[in-house]
Length: 105
Image (cartoon, rainbow, N blue to C red; front, side, top):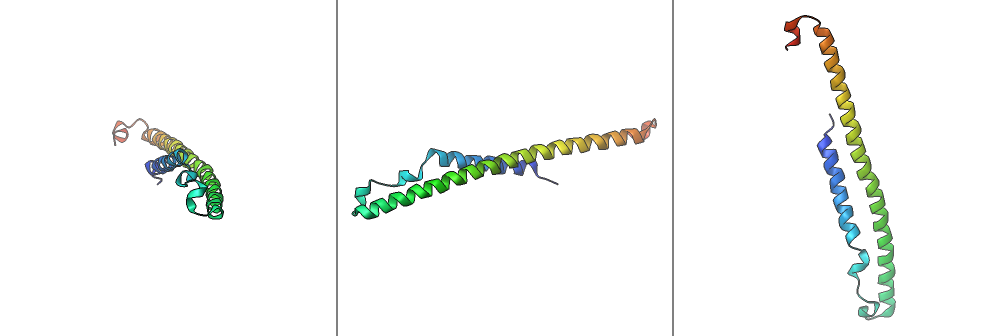
C-alpha cells in the first residue's frame, strides 16, 4: 500500500527547501574581496562561491523534478486506488444479485 500523504508531504518538504534556497544566494555569505586581507584569497573565495552557487542551482532544478514526480505519483496512485475500489464495488454489487441479505454485508 502506498502512503499518499507521505508522498505529498515529501513533495511539500522539497518545495519548502527550494523556496528557502531561492530566497538566499550562496554569494550572500561573502564579504568584499578586500576583507580577506589578500586579493588572491578574496578572488579565490569569490570564484569558489560562484561555482557553489551553480551547484545549488542545479540541485534546485533537480529537486523541482523530484517534487513534481512525487506529486504526480501520488495523483496516479490515488486514481488507481479509486478505480480499484470502483471495480471491486461493482463486482460485489453484481455478485450480490437479487438477494437482499447478501447486499447488506
